[in-house]
Image 1 (cartoon, rainbow, N blue to C red):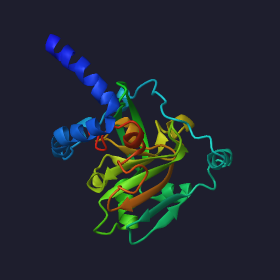
Image 2: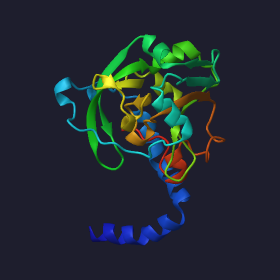
Image 3: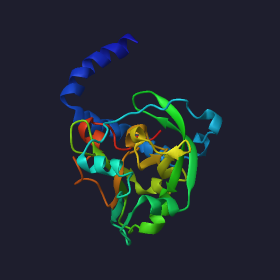
Image 4: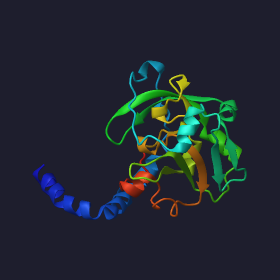
Length: 238
């Protein structure tokens, strides 16, 4: 333990001066193992209604733009989810159209990088259904989710996910939470659920979904808002 403490104290000044280097080295060391276990079946992560948490923490920078305020005040009647990029069929879907698609439901546990977790019942549209509608092109390797909200340091909150995870049976766009319409604090009117990833990647207040070949020219080029600003790894699998 003494050796661990000494090593930690010695490493801290370097990590503070060179966070991007630490981010890259860290992913090089653990990235291959992460990718290996991302293919493990996530079925054991499903729960029952008796497991639903009595309180599910709110987190993130809440949207307060004129655009979101107008949508919220109008009951999201003018809301449109934009789905575009490397797809055969770019579309915009309003909430009634989303609700008319085959309904998907799951009870899963949310894991926050801050150390807390919660179980909730989510209802909405499977991402496989979205894929079937949009028909991604072969060169599409990543799916970028954009929020109506900004990140803490300003700029649109977004996150990129590997396209192979979009066909997972526990990856969905949720508009219901615990049998009620998704509340404001949890991402109304629509949020992502990808249960192989940590909480900060579950983009809330969804505005758009873009299929891309890579994310190097999006945001800071590191695969997500927290990856750009907080030096997180872009594949935060559980």
